[in-house]
Length: 579
Image (cartoon, rainbow, N blue to C red; front, side):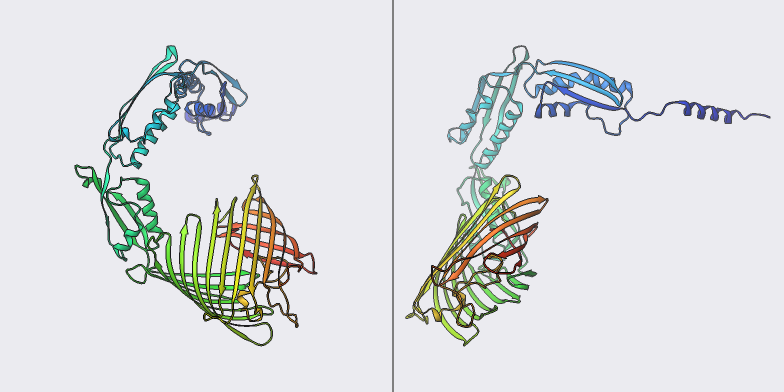
């Protein structure tokens, strides 16, 4: 029988291939000895032999070629760390899984700065703004030459010059001479600040509000240096005004004159004039709740605004509207007229209140000061005959707060104090003076533990307490008071057992929580407090455990609380920042 030559050749190739051993891709491991930390990582990143892809199948010849080049690559890389005379011993070994390349590195002595020539030129040379860099240890004689720190120093110097208005600043000389045989270096560096630019004018583009209002957001004036940080601050202020979606504040360098004056152009894209917000939620204090809000960002070209809110829940219903007026410094000062209707029903109290308030709001750093004059009419009852009280109340509300993160606080505090009162001979049906204070603190205890503490204190001086409106009395109990008790459950009672509220208030809480996984935390807590008429009244106490989940809008909390003085337990659900 005849044999086909092509078929015979294919069969032979198949037999030969089946007889050869099957090998996996050779692994190339790299080991650098003699240096540690960031230097070791930096050296490894420069080695071609250490940068082979995980699925690479280099030939033996390729591996040996990369190994031969590794010493030169290491020497070049060590120069960036100021080591010009290293000793490097290398070897390449076969292993069961492939190859092992070992490099023993002795960096040798570092290059030291022997001498330097530093020059500061230009209009800013005598300003004192740039003197610190002349004394920088990065450039000092006897110090190790640090190329990375040297480059960073130059970048910082250019950035500082731009911040101070020296737009044309540049290095006229930047040279490092290295003498490897002696391990020494010489630096020559000349920096010319150029002229200082000032603002000739500030030009605002089209806007829905008057230019006179926009100029109240200025952080710089004509004649001031062109400072980038001040222009950024002005940009942020205009964005925070809520009139604009986008704001761009830039010097127009093409219009700089021969006296080094440059105009600043402010271009703005208006926000939507009206914003609507809708919300749903649930809390054990309020039950299910719904909110609708209309924010009229500007009512007229004077920048006045109108904010109207409707909040409905199983316990409290509120309709409010606030007309806002920008102050002299609109970033920090504003005025408002506020109208409010509020209706609240608890187990023992029915309240209906109308109020009209004039407010003066001021921000000073992390402090806020609110001054108000409030005219309020309130109808209230404690399971019996309805009463009605008219009050004209001057009020001062002060608060200071600080937090590393408002939504996920690791460390922070808040302290608030409110003073209010009324005089019977001035419109009001009764006279009283009242002070309220509350404080919260969050303190991290290591990486995973936190301590959270809070307290509330209140006191009222009034002769005719029976006519004191319900909203001006003190109650305790609820999600943010003494857990284990319902909302406003604690306080003095009338003859029929209805909680009517007290003259005084004291509550405090201590809580520890622990991050168990991701955004989940477990908590244990102790609460105590009460509302009372007599300082000898005992405080109610509770303790419990809880779970927290850090959501994008703040912590969501579920607590199981057990009163220590009464039977039963209560589950509390709440949402909101820890401060």
